[in-house]
Image (cartoon, rainbow, N blue to C red):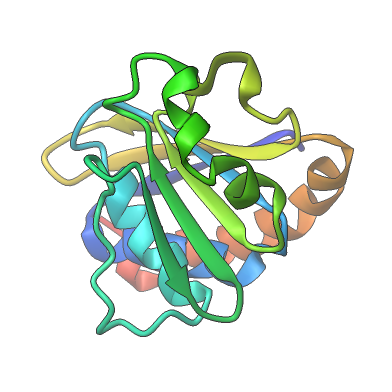
Length: 168
């Protein structure tokens, strides 16, 4: 299976999805989040942080103005928000390569702003707004290693898709 469609009726379910994803992520994983403003990208990242063991008291926010936020848990989490980036050259003064190619997990909002610098081996999550709180997230594993892991992800995500917190 190349993709998994996850329907979330609200924030609690999106946070739970993120937390499960955080538990499944491995060192070096890159997660590219695609979707319009207010689609829930930062909310999902907060859940991922929890799944990586970052305490819930730590405020996970969008690094819109700083471009990169770092958090420390089971694995380091590097949260990049490239919304304000007009040219990938603007990243040259930041440690973005260490974030993407180190032993942590990189979550990138607005990954298309990286252009050809976006690694081919990654997880893509595409958000669609279906209603005030309803979101659809299509999860795709890219690269041979991630495609091999996709079956386990689908099995785990199918379980929470039917969990009562995720029912409308």
